[in-house]
Length: 435
Image (cartoon, rainbow, N blue to C red):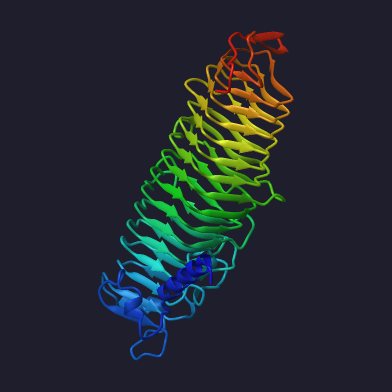
């Protein structure tokens, strides 16, 4: 066996020895790190086991662990104590409920106590507008390693703070459903972290001017058929290292910020995400301003970015194989576009009705139109690189400043930039080598 084969064998042996099946003989060993208080048991064949999860919760005290054996549990559960609710296996420990039309609107699992933990369950409801897990007025809870299936898979709001939602699989029973609903218009939902979840054909809706300082990171949004992460009136949140894959047969945006109440949006950080196959747009904003968008990779989208925002910073992104790499509308100083790559698009950058924006050290390459300016003034383009575009720049009713840009080759003479009103402008000192 070669070294590569030996290495793979050792890794597989390590993984195999690390995965311990949960049985009646090793329950305590399985979760020593999360074991708290007394253990109560639901299902199974042991003496004294409860038949219903809610009965065990009602008889538990703060700090207890409730272990639920694999099986189907047709009930609604309400957690009002600091407990650890632990399923035997997330695929075979199934909590569900079906009822009349009014009952179907109630959550299957409700949590309204600080410090609760729920892991290793399938929570499922097939009715429209159903909620699998509702977390309300609860902080420092952890929801992990579950399968959530419902039109609203997970709902968190009403002053819920510093919670963790991780390693779950979320999917919707209807095309317009929501995997995670975070926030409320008038309550503080802050400091939560949502990470390493797998969203299947569904996404997130984040709303409210008090929904701040949350982190959404390292999630996978697979085959999204609508907006993957929709934000309404949110501010000062972080969206990092998510992978968003759209369904090209649907009208899809990767990350979208919009405002309903003017003046309460902005200050968000969108960084290091990978966004592809979003037929509408990779990242879109129609907000007041102040967001930072940096280090993202956007490919095969309609618009790579469509930004209608003031005081925005867009740096070090790679946008390629889109119809339009960057749409920028109504932007004002001190907005900055720096170090971005716009490659193999029909239009690299499309700028409309703005002023006083700085474009520097961007590379605009292999596009049909590198940059188009319409009704803009006092934008400052310096030290950018234009390479292998059919038309580098076209301006209409625009007057901007150009300096030290590289235009396909070293140039000793000023570079003319043609357009309409004025007919021609110049980069008076073009760069002799790429910036």
